Length: 264
Image 1 (cartoon, rainbow, N blue to C red):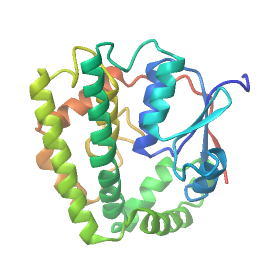
Image 2 (cartoon, rainbow, N blue to C red; image 1 turned 180 degrees about the vertical axis):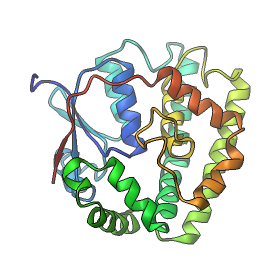
Image 3 (cartoon, one colour; image 1 turned 120 degrees about the vertical axis):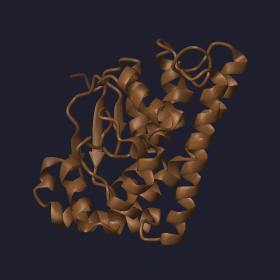
Image 4 (cartoon, helix red, strand yellow; image 1 turned 135 degrees about the horizontal axis):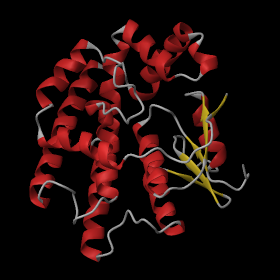
């Protein structure tokens, strides 16, 4: 395996990391993955990006360290233009990038906070999620890993803040309303034009914690807390909910990645 392969620095369950993984898979790019322990990853991100980013994903590509999932997609589009994620027609490209920005900013942070909030209030399921997604060295001490993760997500994402969770629910529903409206506008198959684009990639990736498709990082048999299920259940028949599952089914192919490396 060549050291010149791109390296994705990621968090396994992160929906923003899933966006970057999907972009790499879409373009068929062989790459390595590194998964530092959550929490420690912030120092790694700062080190890699010279202080520009505290979050993952970060992509090491041709000697550059690129932070932020949208910047990663842009860099991949420039370096590996085929198959494209940006529409060729200028107006459609602007619209696709506008939708990418909307879901990045108006959905991503809120669905993450809501999922961690509900998990943090269900100790057993939180531990179950950690055991199912943690690398082997950490899975063996899943109880300690879950306690660490609850503390980290509480500090980093406000996972213990009920008032913030209520706002997050409203934001997720507003984003689903926007998705439904855009699908109706575009005819229901793709958000922009007649082919898969960065708009579809972003919306589907960031909605994965709500929809839970089998191709997504969390195992499909991993039940979420009852309160999250109660929030999700009436949304299952929404066009956007079904569309996310369909995008994963049709377009989320396995990536050409080497084994993930875990580091502190």
